[in-house]
Length: 515
Image (tube, rainbow, N blue to C red):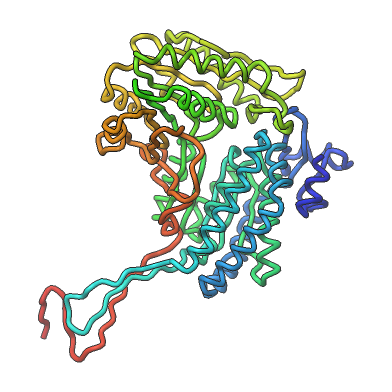
């Protein structure tokens, strides 16, 4: 299957990729200069991919500086036409690229293709944006003066992505960065290098055909050799990093020391509040998707459920029934259309899942369903059962304040809304949140300044599945960055305030006279 996918994507015979059938594969798999990509659904290797070292990284940046110097002078509407063509190519290749995501990241078919659709959508958004990179005109206090602001590209934008969205997050960043006049330097996760190669090849092929090669350079390397070099590089004024809070703190510290910019989209420990007026059928559907979709490996996954005590038993019963159906027959090979839950990305994630379940039990939690490794149809991959854990009556469950990248849902009871909001806000991360309620007062309280402290706050929908039209990101240890829609484009540009004097004689501000 992989051979056919690479052929469809135009990556067959790529110089960096060695497939298992190649005589060179055994030696490459043992070499520190290669990384082996595995299919988490089977545990079998997909390919060995050559790694860049610090010298290769430096050569790539040198070339990128030259590309930027010419690309920044291309008009924004022309840049928009390049982005339009790139979006069209991703639209054409949505199915094979989505299947490659399924093979390498373990996402079910719908989610793999949905991720490619996000690149198409952000390209559509960016085409319109190419004629809307607006500045402001401001009144001057001085006669015969005009004040305005304008926006210029930054230069090289460094993008570091995680395994769970190996294509879409690159799109959010690089498509906007390109339409703003920048070159995007991408360091992908070493768990999904094939998706990165295919994604970059698609974009670069289109841009090159239109006369603009080198807009989307790719460096595949270790954190120690390439990642550390990249975040310390003063030639890269902005680092956009998606990943763990631990990683984000390292990036912020190094980039901050050189007074560079960061755009951080880090961990989430997202909660859903369900009040007595909620539609429980709607809540059940939304919570189930948000809690178990992508096998719980989204930063927006619902990890905590805070339910009013009057409806808790009824809602939990509905959720357990839904989970029973999933655990019985819908966990398995993500390339099969009937599968709803694929594997975790690797054994380390399985170990983290089991540790969290056991710790929750030790802290007084009760496993209502799940809590075990799954072995669907004898597959050798890294599967686990979606799990619901009831917190003790005290609501004291310390493990729930940690983000475990797995499908574990902790359930808490509450008596009044302020108590629920305080419990939701009690964690270090502040990415996504939601309330299910038919009460206008409850919804507005949740959305007020005294309500959710997250970057995303939803009413009667779950915590995951954000659209590209809104700015995406969160507060506190989630990092404060914003990607995708709204005015997120400003992160990729520098603001310049301009004052033009068209009169006679020097006029100073603040009424100052000099001379």
